[in-house]
Image (cartoon, rainbow, N blue to C red):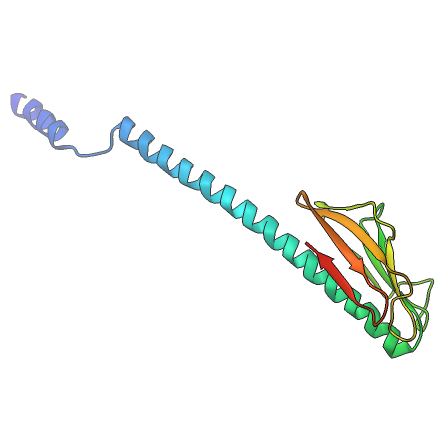
Length: 156
């Protein structure tokens, strides 16, 4: 009987493992690292979303101009704030049914400007100059439309 008690005590002394404090410390460090990673990742994802939107908007405007050239008729890009959509029309195709409907992200807010659409004539030039203002992730941006040769610039 005495021998058995001695073996139990020796087993408890030689047992190696983590204490509760060590486990809590490791867990705390892991949580802090994950929180920092998520914060940095969210900022990066927002920036990528903004860049994708800007590139897509430029491509949509170029496509609208290309449609006016292809059909030799006016083509237009409309921004519908209430639907959160961008529509592209061409009179050579159909003005009732859009050629393209593209939804834009919720963090994009179109603001006051003196126009809400861009129309290219059959000569691939813009029929009216103006600006379209919008905010992307809290940053104000302007889409500036110049007369002549369909020049469109995004002022950031």
